Image 1 (tube, helix red, strand yellow):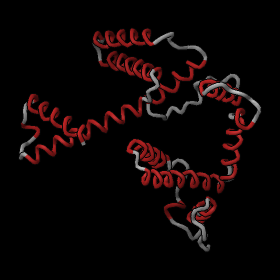
Image 2: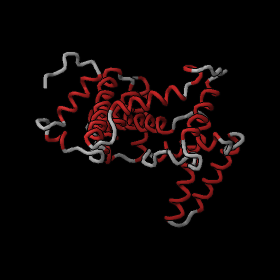
Image 3: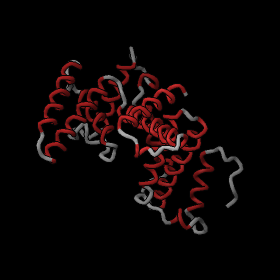
Image 4: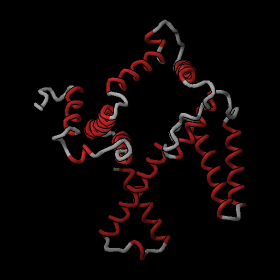
Length: 261
């Protein structure tokens, strides 16, 4: 196979992946299956999210390429098995976009984004089996917090939601009380799950993406703790030898220093 001259074309990627899977291709690529690529596919998705969190456009470009590689590779495997082709994937998403945007590709008029979202959900339900639950299509392999927010968002679309935030806050206080009264590992596990579920509901109502918020909190904690470790190295101190009070003082110093950088 002669390499495509214009490597910026989508067709060039399709041809390269086909060659890698071909008789004289790469042994690793040839042995991949839909299932074997699952773990690395998820990893690539998280790497894209990380670049979005960091606002790194150069890395985002690179990571989107890695994600696109996985999509085309999955489509190539499917084509070889007689399941579908990459053209079928593109055709399906184009049809879906046109169908769900009648205010752009049709004559429908909308007054705001809220109406667009409502119409999107209505059209989405029309595409599904009438007997299928509105939450059935939410992928169960999603991170638990994201899954929680998504199923709560969907049921809210049909009116199954708190009237105001005050009711959810009261529910949160109730769940905290139930957690403190739990006296077995099983009941603590259940009550803690209920507490997280309620927190996810509050975040949804406040327009907060819980996964994004928690990732940022993790990043902030990691940045501060690593600075604490750096301060200990500079001062020739072993962090584990410090009392909790001393560690907390170091934490406060790290908070001040990292917030200025």
